[in-house]
Image 1 (cartoon, rainbow, N blue to C red):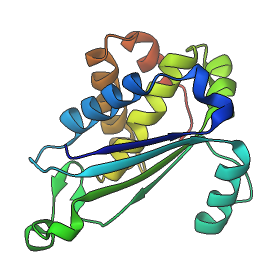
Image 2: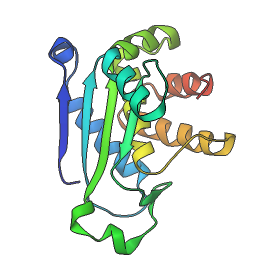
Image 3: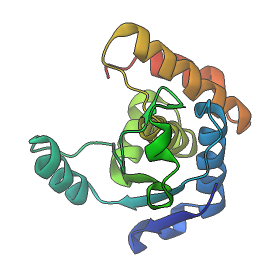
Length: 172
């Protein structure tokens, strides 16, 4: 992995350890990418307002969401590089951007009884998997994402059983 760029809004900075975020990103890449490929990634931990703005501007939804992932290119499909010629281009060594609403993480940690650390790692892993071309458009794809996310959480030595139960009970 090239570089991991992490930005945390100052109001949330004391609640989050960048080292843990880096570990989750690296683990997500290692478990999600079925092809060897060295790309950089950007993560922003921010407010509901910012996620609502992004959600409206890019998806037309006027509400905050927990995570948005913006792939730099569409060369990934379920962890595999689909266009080798484009993928070898040095200008495309950027996987993409992930934005996470920390207030949503706090809210969901209470709703799903996961705790803030586990919830943040679940959502971050989910975002990285989206950048790697995973999706949850149907039941089969959703199940693949759940399995990958649980593997990542297990690798991080967090409560993967709680994560699995929580993810299976979610709508999306």
